[in-house]
Length: 229
Image (cartoon, rainbow, N blue to C red; front, side, top):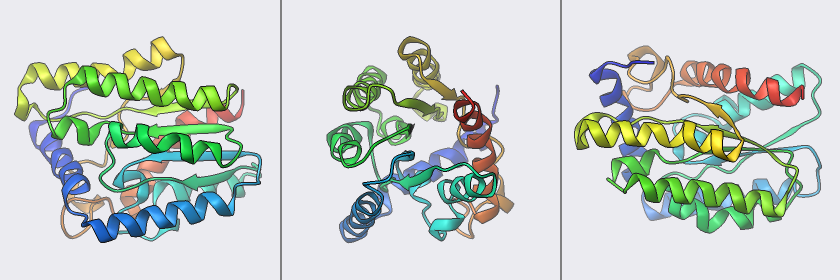
């Protein structure tokens, strides 16, 4: 799958904002909301956890308009008895995700774990081997606590501003992990959304509700297969 430089540049802006535009106060507020959401559904059984950064958190839109909320709506409409828990936090890196994932998954049963992290690592120029190591460690932690959990890994890309070799090495992280860790893979979470002006908010950065609908469809195509196994 190929993407134009402008397309990838738009993705850079999306993730840069996710990494840098949220002050400490906002991050603490987001984490509090995540804690309340996790606690609210802690006793329910068929939980699907969306674990990621501002893309998962739904920056700039209502919770029910973000792709995780739309997945809950789809599940309900089709009669699937699953509860979506949006555990996205703006600015999350794979390292910070690794430090909090145990707390999140220990608080309730987890049927499916959707992992959307890594983009902010790429923008900071973190070595791909470090991102690779952290993502694998997150998967291992989740499986240690919930051995039967199903995992869906969301792939991401970075533009070649740090060099084509870096961008290519980064992109290879996700399919390699998916194969070696035996997890399901979304090749590119922002397919058909990144860089499309009509599908982003007025800042030209974050997906609109319509953009989230497309992301939700991308996620659903992969998630549906897991629900039916």
